[in-house]
Image (cartoon, rainbow, N blue to C red; front, side, top):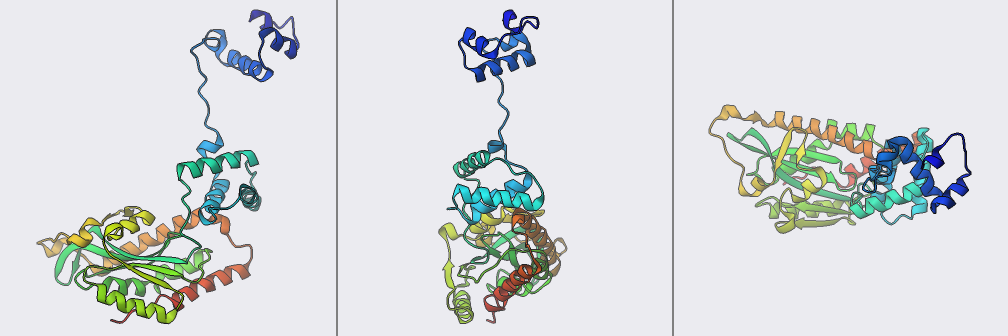
Length: 334
């Protein structure tokens, strides 16, 4: 190797490769190893250079990565060419240099193979989940102190929380009534004003009936159909539809500092003997609503590539969300 590394006797690369019987690209790799590591380590047969993670493995810069994940989730059948165009446009809007087309194709394969970009349930606002779960905080309710039971109304595509209420588990319809009431509260006003997610007309609602709430859920089903005959309203109970199972799929097992306890939703929430240990129902409900707002903001950051390009589009999408609340979600009267 001293022959090829001498500064006073340069040799054309082609001649050096021929003398060593190796391809030119391997010759350059060898020179880099010798330069970085020296001849002892660089020529050791057992030595392997640790590969640096390529963008396809570690992910792109935030703008390109969010654009890619959003496209895969909302258009799982999209062609690589359309995904590449989408990422290029998103990066151009943000004033950032996009990754190469080849690296985008490799990243698409990685995400699909690892299941990271699980296809979304559909366009935002098309599929709604209504579920409830026990939450790891003691609440004072109807003279008792027990784990709080929260009812959630969730859009399964954007994973945004549309409504939330802490109800009395002994009154099956209580949590749902409070959740629909809160859809007109600060949480919903915040969502309409600060997001540009396009909520289309609701097509299906999965309602996981609370214990003893079958009769009330049937009444709720009739009311939804009055507002929108196209809505497919499915009532579920047990099996994979146990309370909290689907909710954890979309929100995880916590909301801020509050841990979900789905097992206690159906088995009965543990009671406390001391009334002083519980938090008032309104206080814990408001605390959960604050965490729901933070959750929605985090979800919005993941769909940032859909930012509106004009005030007109922003107003149209806000109107679509308002129409969703007016025509489909209502305050049930049992």
